Structures are given as C-alpha cells and as structure tokens.
Amino acid sequence: MISQTTPKVKKRTVKGFSIDIPFVLVLICLLVFGLMMVYSTDLDASLRMKQEPGYIFQRQVMWVALGLALMIFLAFFDYHNFEKLVVPFAALVVILLFVVLVRNEVQFNSSRALFNGSVQPAELAKVAVILYLSVWLSKRNDEQLADFKSGLISLLVILAVVAALIFFQPDISASITILALGIIMFFLGGGSWKQILLLIGIGGVTGLLAIQFYTTGRVRVAEYLQGLQDPTLGSYHIRRTFESVIKGGIFGVGLGNANTKFTGLPLPHTDSIFAVLAEETGLFGSFILIGLYILLIWRGYKIAQKAPDRLGSLMAFGLTGWIVIEALLNIAVIVGLFPFAGNSLPFISAGGSSMVTNLAAIGIIMNIARQGEGLKIQERSQASATVDLRRRDWRRSVSGADRFGKAG
Image (cartoon, rainbow, N blue to C red; front, top):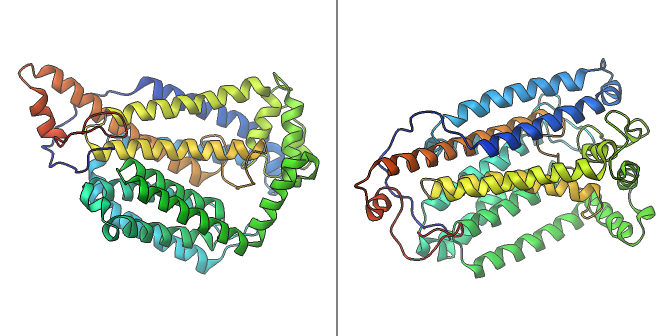
C-alpha cells in the first residue's frame, strides 16, 4: 500500500520544463484519433441536430483548445494546492448536481446537463471524487483507515451522496463509476482487504437494487443477457454496433466511408464512435487505439511510482485509472461484453464536459510528473544526501511496501 501519512514537506521549487514524453505522445495520438473520427461522423450528426455541416467538429475543436489551455495551466499548478481547494470544489460539484435535478433539462430521456447540454456535472464529479479521496486518504494512517467509523463509514458517506445525486438524473453508469473509483482509491490508499471486500459487496448489492429500481436498467441488462445467447436478440443499438465492427474487417472500409453512421447507428459521434472507428479502420485501427490506452495507463503508473509523495501517487494513478476505465467500458459495450452504459470514449467522443475534464486530469498528472522528475534531478545534484535524509524530507519512513511497489 502507499505509505499512510503525508509528511510536512519542505517546499522545493521545480525549475525548468520537464515532461514525460511518452505520456504526451500518447495524448497527442489520442487527440488526433478523436478529431479524425469526430470529423468523420460530423455530417450526419450535425444535420440531425438541425445545424450546418461542420457544427459538431468545430465545437469539438473549440473544446479541445479549451481543454489544452486548462491542461497547460494545471501542468504548472502545484497539485499540493488541491489540499485547500478540494473541499470547495467538491461542494461546488454537489451544488451543480442538485441544480441538474432541479432544472431538469431532459435530453435523451435523462436530465444530466446544464446550458443546453454543454456542461455535465457528473463528469466533474468523477474528477472531484478522485481529488477529494486522494487528499482524504493521504491524511490517514493505518490505524485511522482500519477504524470502521473513520475509515469505511466515512468513505461510504462521501461516495453515497455523490452517487445518489447522479443516479437520480438518471445516470446509472456514472454512479457505478463513482463507486468503482471509490473502491479503487480505497485500495490504493491502503484499506484492509476485509474492508475492500465489504465495500465491493455493498457496491454490488446497491448496484443490483438500483438496476431493479430503474426500468431502463432492467431492460438493458435483459437485452445484454439475450445478446450473449444470440446476438440477433440483443438491443437495436448493439446489433448496429456489431454490424459496424463486422463490416470493418481487418483493415476497415476507409476513413469517412462507413455507412452505418448514416443508416441509424445511435449516437455515432459520442457513445458509438468506437463502432464507426472499427468500421473505418478495422481491427488494425481498433487495436492501435486500445494499445494507446494501455500505454497511457502504463505511463500513469510510472508517474505515480515516481511521485514526490503519497498524495501525488494517489492522484496520478486515480486519474489515469479513471480515464482508462471509461475507455474500456465504452469499448466493452460496443463489442457486447458489457450492458449498454452510455459513457463516452475519452479523447475520442464528441462532447465538451468529457474532453475538458479528461484534459484537466492529464494536466494534473503532468504536474505530478514534473515534480517527480524535478525531485529526481535535485536528489542527483545533492551528492551528500543520503537515502534517510531524502525519505525524511519527502516520505514517511515506515516498513513495508506500498501498492505501487515502493517502500513506505
């Protein structure tokens, strides 16, 4: 597990501009992939929205530009500042989730967004939960986490409030994602296996009850189970995505040449964009995209390992894990391995909230990488420094290894 307390760190200034080049290259490739696919799906999607051709692509370029600006800012914004900002940020997100329910702007049979669909607070909630739990867990030691009231109960209260507000939008997939992120963060933070298994059990039972309560959830699960037995009995959405994947074959039909996006494939520019990608680039392009996500989580794990402190480790792996979980869920839905969830494909799907929050997360990870690299350079320059002195400054000296594989 990650060492159990955050030390009082003597602040050191990170000079120069150091970046994790493989991490940035993977991001660039994902953004290029995404803009390419949004452009390919733009014509039909824009016309369905009664807009001029190019409308969705132009908006996506705007969201990418805004997200990159925020990413660059956060890359230079010391992540330790979130220790003071995370509570007001979480409070703001909870308020926005309440406003969504009160305003009730219904789109696609749910009320999830504000300002005519431009802002989805549920996306902000995922980042807020990761940042809040990173700070919360970094301030607790083994004894506090092992205590049922201050450990598991406190965590459940935090997650339950956010997940419940999202569930009643309704957005089951996002609420389940919030619970999953909580379990992952608790594991990374050093929670005991008994508590983690109990948390998984509570989350599983809650999820089943939620699906039973929510009619659409029951229908989606039933269609998913039917589709496993016979693909022709699956939902219309899944049958059309299967059609796209099969048409794509090994190398695809060529960029812009997919026809299912014109013949009724639901949401080809958002939820189903991976199906269009599979049709136009085939298994070859699909595996390249999956490989990029694998590289992303690998670099995120490396950055978490090299982070200056436990807070940075939790943030880096939590944010990277969230992005990749969203990607795997979206892809799993498209190929029929998971019930329809309605989540976007990070950096690929059209949408402002998803793009901006994903790039903001990347900016925070880049800042952690910069500080980790800066610490490494400073330690190399201090020939007289010993391992004990470095640990005294930056990490609590405890026995045992954390869940990133480094000593406490």
